Length: 198
Ligand SMILES: Cc1cc2nc3c(=O)[nH]c(=O)nc-3n(C[C@H](O)[C@H](O)[C@H](O)COP(=O)(O)O)c2cc1C
Image: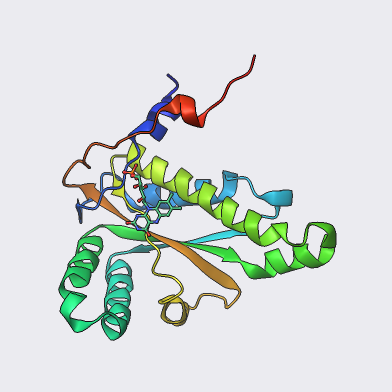
């Protein structure tokens, strides 16, 4: 088994994380930069963007998310939501994933024949990028999950970190030191999902 596939197998959703890092901040930044640089995109358009939030910036994100949800989640149900936000905030940092709509819209104009595909491909490249970051963080000993509080938090995120208006938030990935292993995962029979003809 290749080291790459081993890492893919090891990646899980780690909800129980703490504020310790298994590697220095500049190494985390390197993972995010390499992932953004080397993940493929349609027509090599390089539409993906990422923002790494550490320390008080990470805290601020989960405080924004908590306060945004407080306004819309019924008060009776809010305790469990708040608990969840606290668990993400308890981590070491968060990676924010974006897709630059300026790039997507230019492709739609320049290559009208494929117009409808570009927004789809943009989401696909973002998903590829998310998997690369998720797997690389896991390989480095960190645990992460994939969250989607967009578009609820978009405006405040943009205002807080001066994000260009054309960057569309696609996902949030809180990470930290894993404090508990995820439960066993059930898999469907692989033969029903992969067909081989030879
Ligand atoms: C496209 C996509 C969207 C997801 N969205 C969320 C999400 O919003 N919140 C969450 O807690 N997990 C989310 N997940 C995590 C999945 O629930 C999780 O990966 C799946 O149950 C398998 O578990 P594992 O990650 O431990 O292997 C998402 C995963 C994918 C691939």
